[in-house]
Length: 208
Image (cartoon, rainbow, N blue to C red; front, side, top):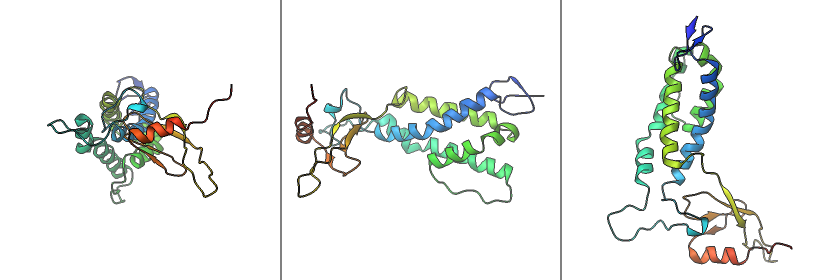
């Protein structure tokens, strides 16, 4: 018999219990989303999509960026911790292989998730990995909010895409903290108060 390296419950020769293994899998799925959200949170949040802030600051000592988020991203803690754990797991499982090069948070989380069954059953530091993932998630959620802010549809693109006057009409989405709206189909950019007012004015009228 063995015990879970995170919660201490008895397991069948595994280093991580089933419950904590499932939670670790969920965190590995969420961490790349949280990391992306940290990037979008660099610009301080406003209350609504119509109040998107400019990235140019007025004169004064205060940075236009969210300094807590900037510190978190600048430290690279999430990427460093996850990659170091991936390197160590590969060292234990395949000692003959060279260490993998850094490949970003998403790639490391995907690799760890694919190896999770082996990690829970055979990796002595599985509990440490689970504790690190939990701490990274808590730190990121404290900065970006909980649950993770999702993109919201705020209208349809009004850009004319050809000389026949065809309007793009694709959905325009926004996530809290973004300083501009970009159509994912035609790549038209809406930035600043005038663009937003035009976008709002030319939205299709709903049929009664």
